[in-house]
Image 1 (tube, helix red, strand yellow):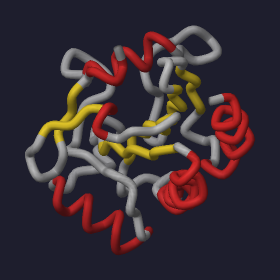
Image 2 (cartoon, helix red, strand yellow):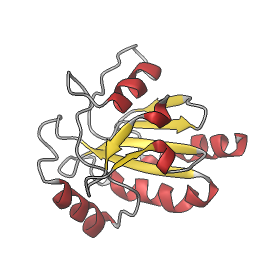
Image 3 (cartoon, one colour):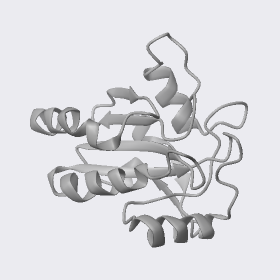
Image 4 (cartoon, one colour):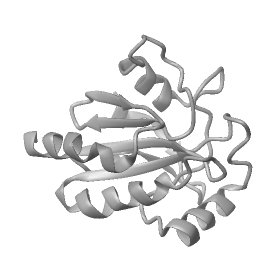
Length: 159
């Protein structure tokens, strides 16, 4: 189950989705030196607007795409907070594709391939909207976080 996959917090402790009780999670592979990095602002806005209704945004830094997140976990945390006021959890850096891909992302990709059937994540800021029941919807890196509002609201009304 998606909720059972563990991942590492920046402080070295282990967490899982179960540690972030929510009706839905928005899981995003992030990068701090990408043209899409300003999406942190929209992700934080979604977090602020919908967390009281049951949405939790979770960021997973990844350096696999053009080395656009080369910093340490601590540098990435600081960057997100100072530049975008991020208050949602941002975890230790992971791989999302390849042999070292994190099991959480392996399962997300398998459950929600792209529209052409591909499973690999194509770039930074691929978004997965996940229900408590494990239903997964994938959104393109180019999808602005604020464009997810309708999907989030529909989902939160259903639960």
